[in-house]
Amino acid sequence: MRVLHLPVNIASLPSHTVRGLRQIGVEARGLVFGDMRYQSTVGLKAIHHDTCRSLTWLYRRLLFTGYVLRWSQWAEVLHWYFGTPALTWGLDLALMRVLNKAGVVEWLGSDIRIAEVECADNPYYAAECATERQSPSPSLRLSLERQKRFAAAGFACLVAADMAQYVYPGLWSRVYCLPQRIVVADYEPIYPDPAARRPVLVHSSTNPRLKGTSAVLQAVEHLKTKYNFEFRLISGTSRDECLRSVREADIFLDQFLLGSHGLAALEAMAYGKPVVGYIKPSLVERYPADLPIINANPDNLADVLESLLQSGRLRYEAGRRGRLYVEKHHDAVRLAPRLAEIYRQQWRQKRSGAQEAIVRERWPW
Image (cartoon, rainbow, N blue to C red):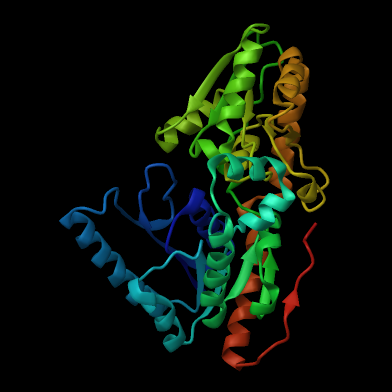
């Protein structure tokens, strides 16, 4: 089966997914356009740009368009990420309809997150919206418009546990659920030394507001008066530099606003690091029961970190559980057969022209 992944490389997920599929014999290509300084592009045709104000950008955009036109004809199935347009004026999905391509669109976060839903479900998100005086109303409209665009083109919907609450199931022929994925073999575990006298705390602040960085900084300042530790704030560094800091960490601080986790937490767990983050109550039951992320919110983060700073053994054991967890639930190679079956189902449906009833698959855990 020939599968094309496009058009953006969010959190390196297309790179991991393409490589996992190739290991089970799927002919997978990845075609992405954008700023690649912070992502892995292994296995992808990546056309890089970091500015929209140059002739170089225009040339690269035209180059990308040419690849989209050629490789879309090569592919039997399209795997779209984030709902980002590949061509202007809606020509991308119009082309896919003309070519009669089977496809899935994977929603990953702010592409369809509905602020009204999140505010009702997450007091910390609601407080942030109120503080910033931002009206959540447009997000409801935008989420629906984006989903309608892909559903009308015949795509199926693919989400992980944390995104299911934002999906309009009545729009879709099928809604599939699949965990986020990394190639676990890329990450050699380096478990925290239980005897470390000066633990290293690492927080990646790619988006300070959504990561809850202010709560992290407040907790760190409070704990500095009582404990000897090093704190590293990662911001604006390359992917290699970021991963180097994670490998050297004794504790990884994820995000403390959205109430879920992303690929950064998976990478840290793959390296054998204890991960602290906020998982909102409504998602706890959707994630696997053995989720090892140490749950902390902006109100109790300092207290949770204090227990980890006091016990090297606790840090080590949490790191071991994290590694086992990603091996079991999030390995791109282990998940590849399930994803390939999703592609086959979509391809068969497109070939037969059957209008199937809505299918909502059960969660895989």
